[in-house]
Image 1 (tube, rainbow, N blue to C red):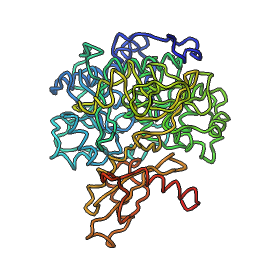
Image 2: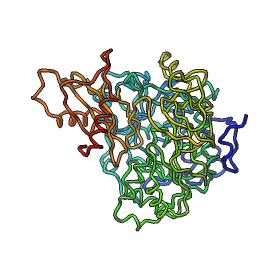
Image 3: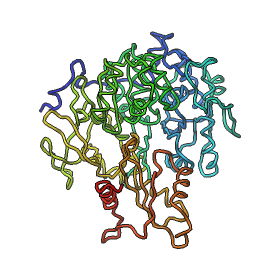
Image 4: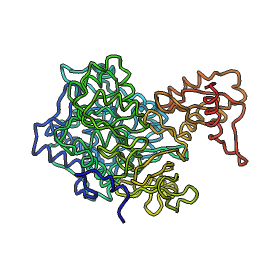
Length: 555
């Protein structure tokens, strides 16, 4: 039976395909046929495909010589930079499994994910390592490899540098230098991936109902399929120049700004952090043609007072993810980039970017994210999850196909909850129309979408319980005009702290212990929290109360 979304399938895009080699070997192919072509540009420093490929082989050998074996988890703790790309592909060629950590994480978050992954090797940026240094006695790292943004900066940058790129290079006791490790490693071909479907490429951490992140096990095949599928969908080629500021540690940036561009022989303009005027200057300077980013990035760019002074006319495609983009914002983007196609995307850590829904080129439908490209998607009833619903009826979104994870790392019970007969039950509530277009209408898991990041209330609550004054806490999302949603914490204080601590002190504590996007922007002290008969805290009641405040004009 033909899938309903085939009615609007874009021309020139195969409905099925196969992948036969690891992603890193596409980089090797480009290094062979176009060795002098620029692969990465970093504030004016250009790295060719040959230079990139050689560096990847060297760091892979360096890892192997340090004892990294097939299947070992290796942490990448970096902002966007050439070393992230080199380290990422180097880990894969060495046979390791990449665990990319959020560079905004604080010590408690880092400790949990490093230990959960049972990682013994870390490749990181020196200025971020101070948070890891705080927990060195509580993690089992045997190999620490550090680098500085300065290691790959040009003598004469063509763009303003972030503050951390201007700081002196730092060293830490027992840490190896990234550049020195490469220099002393052999320049020989290496690729220890032997089975695309069985060998793991990523442990991509995602939150969940338990309150603690879980590592989604992503095979080389799934990673390759999502990346090659992106190339087909957008007709990417060696002529494309990609804006590489979307965070690489996230599946959106990893697929859309690293893997797919380098598979297709394009150039990636790497920026270590999102600074609106620097991004605008980079787009103008490099004549970028493709960018997929969180909606909030586009909102920030449009807010620049001199945005009209920059030339965005080189763009042929601009895609958003995370928070639905309004028609008003789309119209403003279209004025800046009149030749760009504009669309949206939906994916998860468990399905990878491009693995949920994507807008067909030239067929945008307002209010809908798009259609499925890589996987089968169905809408099922919320009660049993067994009944597939007809068009335009709301239910849970379930996904099955080549980009779906193998399961959660060391979490067999939680894997069984979400993977049933090959179908991944997303926890997102949505509908699908007659043409296969998907719309999300709610979140069964109560997750908060903040600036394109997924914030899971149980995880924030778990972290807040680390504060000595907190007796009970519930976290829910509240509307935020810039971020889409922001977390708000409702806290019952321990009796000995009542009247002795202020909400602002909790917020300051959160700044030290949580990533920026995750920490509550508001804290409200309460005498008690709403609970069910089974004594379960009812977040939905708190959320409704916040909505009532807004409706009454008090919020």
